[in-house]
Image 1 (cartoon, rainbow, N blue to C red):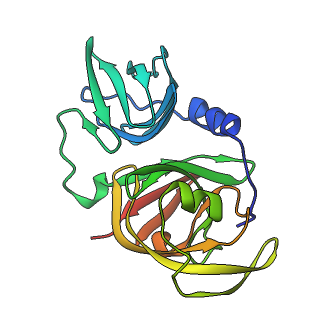
Image 2 (image 1 turned 135 degrees about the vertical axis):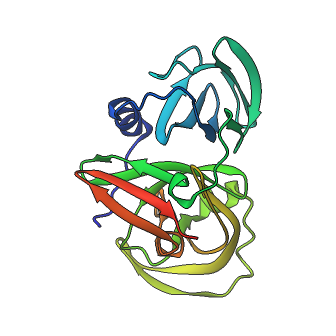
Length: 217
């Protein structure tokens, strides 16, 4: 898959253009938290909401910080943390632990979390592992400088990389533990890559342009 770096504006376009799935019961997961905006998975559709805005499913974001969000559902407001699930459904069968992503110029973007911290990812089946640049790793509190290091070939050339393990990586309802990753000693990749150490543990399918990730059991 071609590597590229796309802004939050492009991500917003993807989320707005995602088809709406209506349901009598909303299944909502808080997958990303930022200042005055939040990323929610609503009935398997990712939505980027800004404060005061309402999703096509009727979910309104009242306030948001990097720590929590106040969300209004059916007229009821409540504060939620990253990874919180809203609604009465309980994820059980494997087919429910699924994330759907639509492309923008051939790039598949999604928002998830690493060890409880929000991360925006570029899905990259050509990357052998989840990969972060040094600044992102530091923001996530990853202790990588004492980890095994080596030289790897990247789109920008040969760079030094540290091999680490992540306690938890979550994309929507899909949560994996002890996932291998690399930290590149430099500014690239500008957007974290969701590589095969995660993707190799899920089923990947495509319907037209939509990419579906489904957890294996």
